[in-house]
Length: 117
Image (cartoon, rainbow, N blue to C red; front, side):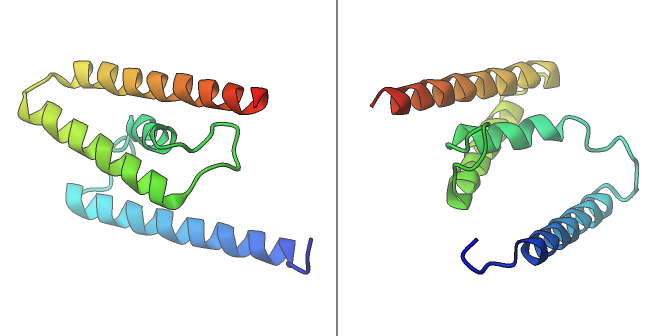
């Protein structure tokens, strides 16, 4: 593969991923002032929504980090607006799910349009 050491590159990427995950866990535990194992339930929906919202394909291999950052900013703005409007947390889950559903439908439509061109 063009002289790229695949095994070494994969190991480095996994190590970096673990370091970032550990740092995120430490930051979250310090913000919550405890280390509860159930603290982050539901965050995976937010993360997947942020990635898919700005063009990262669910099939993989397509997308840019800058798009993910834009998706995080958009979802953060939507979540802050819902909190300011005193929308219940259960309704917020529904809104996040609808945003994810719309992003997935748009992604599928975009992939279908690419195949026909």
